[in-house]
Amino acid sequence: MLYKNIIESIGKTPLVQLQLDGGAQGNVYGKLELLNPFGMKDRVAKQIILDARRKGVLKDGAPIIESSSGTMALGIALVGTALGHSVHIVTDPRIDTLTLTKLRALGCTIHVVDKMTDKGWQGARLERLHELMNLHSGAFWPRQYENPGNPYAYTDLANELIEDLGQVDILVASVGSGGSLSGTARALRQRQQSLHVVAVDAVGSVIFGQPDSPKRLQSGLGNSLVPKNVAHALVNEVHWLNDAEAFAATLDLAHTEKIFAGNSSGSVYAVARWLSHTVKAGTNIVAIFPDRGDRYLNTIYNESYRIDKGVNQGHLPAQPEQVTPDTAVQSWSFTQLKRLPLGAGARA
Image (cartoon, rainbow, N blue to C red):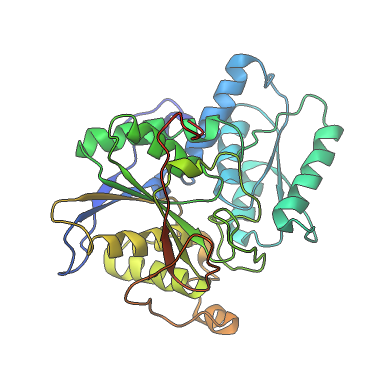
């Protein structure tokens, strides 16, 4: 398919039916958002930046400043620099060398904070971001964690799923900024009120009430803050995986399904695969795979790293433990949440 520029190529990613195993009853389809130019957050960067330009909030040539340690940084870099803006990315030491290399190649200025605040790395990055906003007059901050353009960007993703499948019974997606899960779920549920929404988080992330563990190894999902774009009322069920489990699932996704992805995709895969054993035949489960595996070459895909970090167990539990919402978890667990109807407390 021919596009006039790289920005037009964002979206319309493949939907692939997974092979699973003989015990699966439901169908699992992987939405390969990792095949956007740099990853799933390309959709968000495109939506937010083009909208800001249309509204005059982002002037021609004005700088763009954002906090990110992963694919949002790359999406902002892609769209922002392609449209002639200087791009400043505030990040932390957890950023991988490949992402740094890509950002520099695209022409970004990178600011790495050197220590956490009492609100973790995210808090330290936001402090530095505010300093930069004061230094650069007219700068635009996309605010991925609270900008409604983040979840809205996934309306097209939902439309693509309906076009390809017709019916989505269960949506499984990781949660970091909250945009992809909340935006896709909201758009799907407007058509299918019976949609069951499953959020996938990391052990040590506070998004769904767990105690914070800033030293968790997973990236791309989880957070030390609760982003405003997380629409909790849309979620029926939450799963948490620890680092070792997420890494094992990611390796299994590559080995079994031939999808070379990051730990967000791996965790989503583990949950969707397990769900396929618990539903009736013919149930359509969609798993959103947001991140490619190339940036995890020296971590998840490096046996020496896994051994050094104590996360080389190589297998997942047969099934997660069901817990109450207020239970602090250490390994793969899930809880059922009461869903409020849209308009009764949901951030619709």
